[in-house]
Length: 78
Image 1 (cartoon, rainbow, N blue to C red):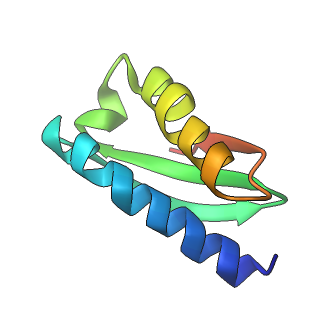
Image 2: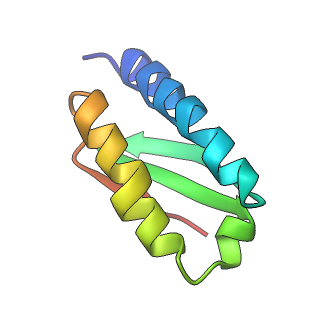
């Protein structure tokens, strides 16, 4: 899979999840994808929320692993 295609697929999944983040006053931004590792920056309320790790791993990472071939992990960048 090309980097461009993976990037587009990741953005599509993030766009589906975004309304749930926005509802709680947060958002996320795709920073980079490197060797199947998606690097995200959590914004707004998500950046300082104590549950942000759960949101990142149980929510966003799970969705990306299921829907985008080649994704192996999601990391938060600050």
